[in-house]
Amino acid sequence: MKIHEIKEMKTEEIVQRIKDEEQSLVDLRFSHQLKQLTNTSKIKNVKRDIARLRTVLQERELQTAGSTVKGAKA
Image 1: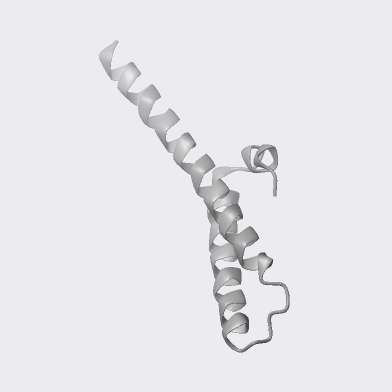
Image 2: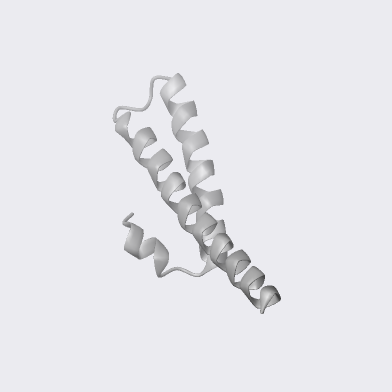
């Protein structure tokens, strides 16, 4: 998943996608422990996707917090 795709998503969609990806990560780890996972790079890719999603979510939270602080000072 590319960063520009994530930025186009709504906040609620990002939160839901994080939950889905975290569940996917649990499933991949479980498969890996059972020696059923042939492509272990999937774990790495899912972890990166989760990090990207959380980064965009954090940026949005900081923007809303920053605009609230600026509005209170004026």
